[in-house]
Length: 106
Image (cartoon, rainbow, N blue to C red; front, side, top):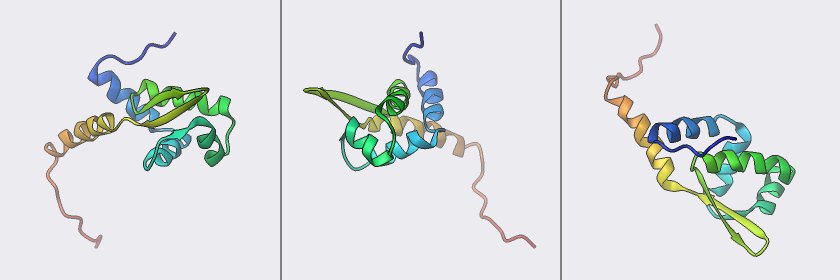
């Protein structure tokens, strides 16, 4: 049984793993502007709920999305602090590499 990541390092790994799948990226893009129920996500993505549930579970384990239940429907939204954490992780590497302007090939 897979457990939810606990450490910051685990969340970074899980986050990049989750973002490495095109259907999950499309899901994230749909959630960028608004919270959506799983039925709306299935409709927009053209996939069965069983397939999407697997991907939503991966996004939740990476802490990239949140869910809430209202009646019999589950609604998903982005967990923006986790995106900020991934962005911060990548930003740390900029300080190790000088920013060199690109030059056209000769």
